[in-house]
Length: 165
Image 1 (cartoon, rainbow, N blue to C red):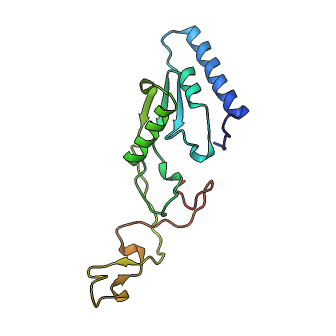
Image 2: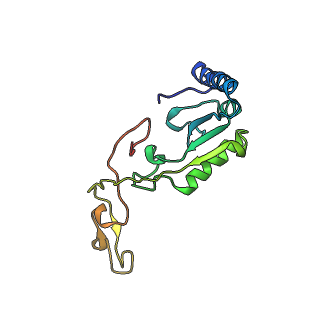
């Protein structure tokens, strides 16, 4: 699961080995189906840039693992859905834009979730009446535990500031 540079020798070799394995396996049985598990998006998830079109052409299916999307949190460090529908859709559209045929994409979704340990980092959260005339800072809660969000602690992972990985 190390990073793979775009158009690198490793990326080319991986595509070639999938192609060779697929050809050899299908020689022994025409009923074999070859699939390749890929990240939820072809856009360099965890620094991995494979030849996704080449992998799709060398196999029967790409199994799009649309889970653990929170392993890369670029925005606010919040506990969130493991497989948010908008992210999964974005990933599928990105695969299609690379030329991968829709008939070769299988969407894998999680049947599990995470229990996040919310931090006690002070994050001002408006309460009822905050911002109204005569109501000032006193109307703010001072802890994230009172909010309707779960703030994750700082946990750098492969170039991002927090992660559930």
